[in-house]
Image 1 (spheres, rainbow, N blue to C red):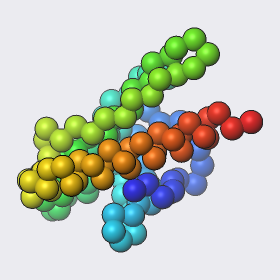
Image 2: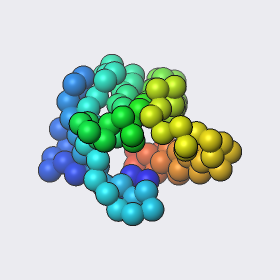
Image 3: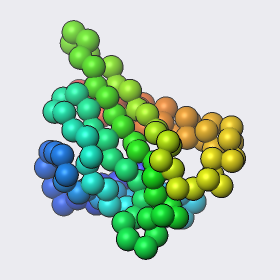
Length: 119
């Protein structure tokens, strides 16, 4: 889903910082997110969706990356917390949406691996 960063530089993120990204969810769109959990070199999380009038309709998921150092490597876990989701219709899609999200997450982790392990 993520296509590119909307940020002009590569400043490190921190708690309460806002960052943007270009996405493709069927159609191309832009999203701005605020970091709600952050521990340097250990993890980051942000809720999805717009703030304001649309928030009750299309927000609520939390994306989280957890980093666990393992010697000269790092185990990266990506999770998708839907416990506060505001889109019950999508949750009813069950396996269809879960399988797509799992596939997208696997592709994201593979791209991250390629970026950090490239010579």
